[in-house]
Image (cartoon, rainbow, N blue to C red; front, side):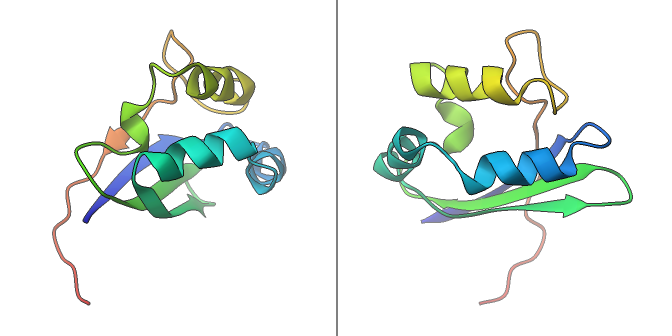
Length: 104
């Protein structure tokens, strides 16, 4: 099991909508993530910068950021594109963060 972290960018004024959409995450998206070894997935919001900090555990080779070719993930990206900074394909602008310290 490995740990991954990355940051994304929330558009100002979209905090409540972002939280609302994730509170009702689609069951088929949750199932896809779980089936691909993603667990213990959390997203935190920095109010001062509107940066979203995500961390997850992954089993296997990839994590949530590697599922972009699936139809359900592309649909989720389209759904979230109006409230986040996105790339031309509507994937969220996401920057991997290297782990510099961990304590169990």
